[in-house]
Length: 295
Ligand code: ADE
Image 1 (spheres, protein in one colour):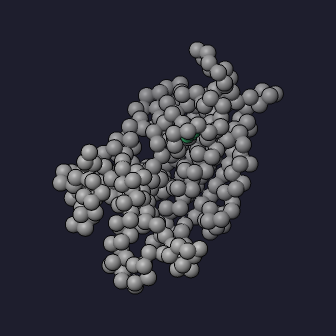
Image 2 (cartoon, rainbow, N blue to C red):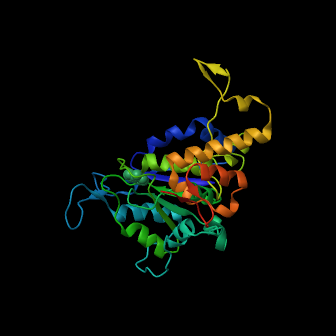
Image 3 (cartoon, helix red, strand yellow):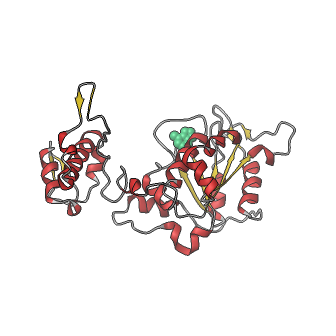
């Protein structure tokens, strides 16, 4: 996968060369290129921002500088015509679609075309599903905004040119810019690339994975007794089926308390008898399409 990152602080991404990401780069799985947006400015101050039209605090990143940079990276000719309809709705529809198996990156040879991603606190949430879908792309371009954000016409223009453009928030809080959010998304996406993880099984059992996503059960290692706290005895039993059931029950319990919204999204038809029994004991009704919390 090729990854281009555009930022006014490209040095931020030097950290990508450590740990598993660094290994993936040396193995040739990832080809990461960082760019300083100011290299596309022409004024003596290398300015990338201007005051917001209509008033308000802060500064907004200028479209001309971004466009010169993006045209070059995306190999596009500048144009004034904005005709192609290509909204983010495609992906969002899948995010909320009950049977959303369709993969937007696999249609129309989309894997071969660069996908443009802008971190933005006012955008839809970035999810494991988005990470999974984007992990099959061959080229991602991240545009990191700063200040009060970027001119809204930038994503609009590139969509109109047929580029797949996504804007994502990584959570309900505001950061100083898109760099940290890009780092988060990059890590979530690239670790799903086949060959990235030493042990691919560790991905399969993780939280937020699959259509029946639950928070992952708790993990323990040796010593079996530490500072007066013992690991649950069943984990020492060697009885794989009982251990699997125990872990599933813990996952259901934790998810019910911490993220009931995830329980509400489960499909009852995909739950086994023991799952239903556990959920009923936690106060959920499980006879409709999705579990419903009883008052
Ligand atoms: N830029 C600033 N805050 C952000 C957030 N929460 N998610 C994505 N990009 C951001």
